[in-house]
Amino acid sequence: MVHLEDRGFGGLRSNPQTLELLLEVAMATERGLLPSKGNLFTDAVDILRREHGEAKADAPLITIPGEEVLETTFAVFATLIMTGKEAHTKCKAI
Image (cartoon, rainbow, N blue to C red):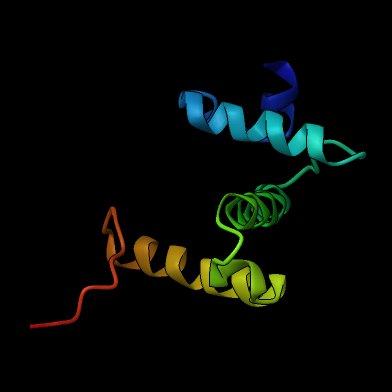
């Protein structure tokens, strides 16, 4: 836990799913966790994108270049932060 605090990830440790993702990112890369949340986010998006592709081999997400997936993910999270919303949906406006 001290390791997480030292890297500024202390606020992420309260969610068990987030802790699991931190562990998965650290184990998936030879270098372990990088010292910023931006690096963590980038690594996590890449891992989750590949896992989705393995679970659903015909899913279009795995065929989209990683950089494009990352940029789109950043845009979605920026929208959530700026609007104060808790979720994003693909529903069409009425």
